[in-house]
Length: 154
Image 1 (tube, rainbow, N blue to C red):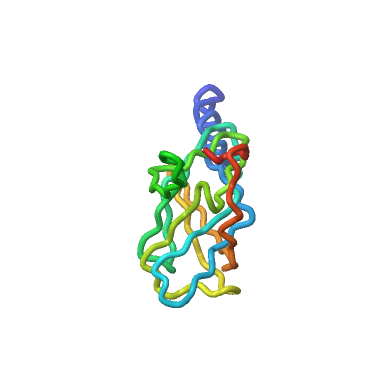
Image 2 (cartoon, rainbow, N blue to C red):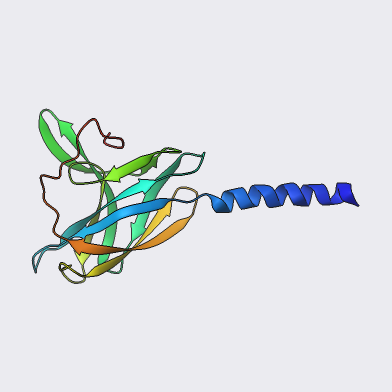
C-alpha cells in the first residue's frame, strides 16, 4: 500500500514545485502619452525567484490592440528599437524593463493613458504561466535610459 502511494507523493511534490514557480513584479508603470498617440510603453522590474530560467514571451492589455516585447540595440552607432520574441528572466535575477532597454510596447490604444490611470497588463511566461498586474500611468522621462552595466540591459 505504501509503495503504491509513493509515485503519487512524488508527483505531488513536483507539481507543487512547478506551481510555486512565479515572477515578482515591482515598480510597474505605463508611460502617459498625449491624446491621439497610438502607442505607449510599459516598464517594470521582473524578479525570477526560482531556480529555473524563465522568459517573458508575450502579454495583453485591454488598453491596447497589440502588446509587443521590445529592446533597444546599438546598430552602427545608432540606438534602434527592435521587437524581440522573448525577454530572458534568469533564475535568481532581476531584469529591469526601462527606457533604453527591454520594455513592453502597447499599440493601437483604445484610449490615451493619462497620468493617474491604472492599466491592466497580463504577462505570459514560456512555461505557460500568466500574471496579471495593474500598473499606474506615470510620466516617464526618456533620459531614464538604462546603462549597459545594469543587469538585464543586454
